[in-house]
Length: 242
Image (cartoon, rainbow, N blue to C red):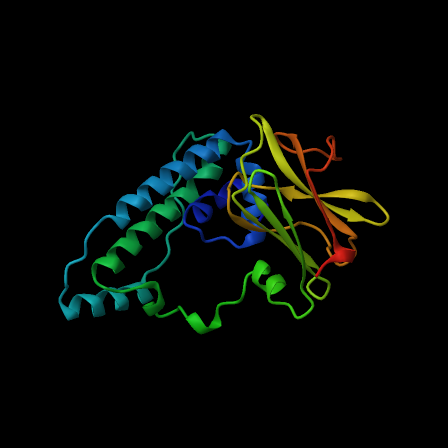
């Protein structure tokens, strides 16, 4: 997706894959507007989850499902005189509000996402992280930090990707970020993305892990660096993976 801002709605509802989440969280760390939008959307969905459902008539459920299949999508609303930035941002948010409203109606009539006519639970593809973690050739390296945190990197040559799994990871110093790197034989340390500020997380590293010799974590200024500017706080040697 060329417009990273448009991921704010899907991110707030946890409807992105691991690669999209990593890209958006890197952007989110430096975009105050997206931070505010994600916070407001999460608050709205939280309010929806607090509503209680009543037993509806059977005919209401059937009518809702029938109407969903025949609804004609409308083009996004625009406001005359809106700036290009406003025009670009608003459609995604309007779509999310409509989706949240539809979810509330379906919840109220006892219809889950799995019962929508177009949904098929058995056809859901595994995420990029799941492909790596379940690969037959997956190898892992773990490190324990002095403060009790733990980080494990799992990589698969067949998938060509690496995944980092953290536990109790403390936030970086103020104004700094954790940056991931892949040690490529011909290029040295190449950026593999910025880690979100979350204690427990699973993130897919950017880049080709099949050609890399190792992965590392450094502490960099907000927004990240083109090359490591500090000594790694962790190194994961792929040659010594279990």
